[in-house]
Length: 67
Image 1 (tube, rainbow, N blue to C red):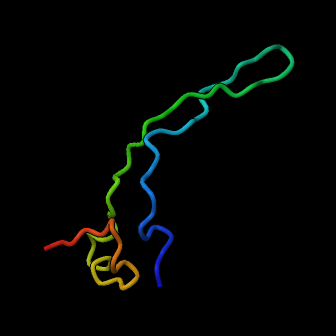
Image 2: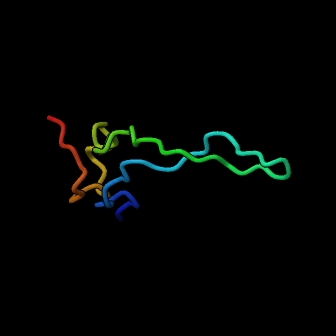
C-alpha cells in the first residue's frame, strides 16, 4: 500500500490567500494576495520511528533515512 504523498510532485512555491475585501458599495469582493510556501519540503513522517518502519513509504523519493 502506498499513500497520496508517495513520490508526489513538488509543492508550489506560493499560493493565493484572501487578504481582506474590496467593497464597491453593493457587494464585497475578496482581495487576494500571494503567500510563500513555508512548510518543510522533505518528509517529516519518515523522521519518526513509525515512519521508518512503515512499508507504504518504501521507495518514496521524499523518504529520509535516519541513522
